[in-house]
Image (cartoon, rainbow, N blue to C red):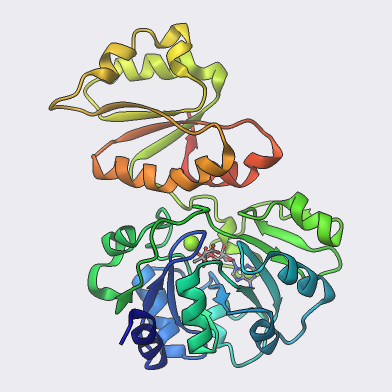
Length: 337
Ligand code: TXA
Ligand code: MG
């Protein structure tokens, strides 16, 4: 039996299957099986107030699980599915209440990965699937990351290679008059507005207790184990000073501009170029292209955690439309110094 068919059997009997998508890996279970859903929350250490998104093969399957399927949902799904857009709509009761943290709505998405689309077609049902990481930790973008997170508490990991998008889907609520983006992601606000007209960005941070609004808005989320600080161009001299003053610690700088060209960095270069034992000192040039950056960021955080880096300095990208989703994740992963 191939892996996809094994995965379908595991889902049918209430097990957990980690699956690849174009965004990040998901931790899947049958969204109509309350016991299986319970296990997903337990394995992740996820608060029961944070709803899971549900994956479907295509628009026709999505319609089955939506109590209402607005015109705007239809348009967006036709245009962007399979793809990194989750549509929040009113749900059918067959999706168990714990999946949606008791909310009357469900986030539906058809992911763009051939293995997982085959899984969803064969299963022919709704697969609840949060990102396959422990709650608040960095999302996994490879099968090995999932293994590192969960080891054998997952029944099967489908290996579909590295994720092409690298950060999570855009979550858009289409139940209201004006649709609301709860989480920016792989499909931009501009792309959405070009299809359905104006949408708004959810403002503010959800409380830890209430599932009334999107809990993905929790301010600490998607974070590495290391302490991460954000900085902008003007702060380079302070960052350099901090690094020089903390040579006893392991640190890394994720730079966008060529920090190497900044006069303040001249003193840093001999240090970061030295290898060998002792504390790790790294200067990593991140991609200047937003899509490329998104693809790399979580794997970079994980690699630095593995090397025992204690402090990560992250240069914030410019406030431009193409960086909205990356900036959102970096703000949640870092603190201001
Ligand atoms: O790209 C993705 O979306 C990945 C892959 C695996 O598909 N999944 C993912 O799932 O990131 P998760 O559970 O880690 O994040 C889902 C986000 C959370 O921020 C959650 O609060 C929000 O969607 N969400 C889910 N259902 C919702 C609902 N009914 N209303 C509002 N927000 C919802
Ligand atoms: Mg997540």
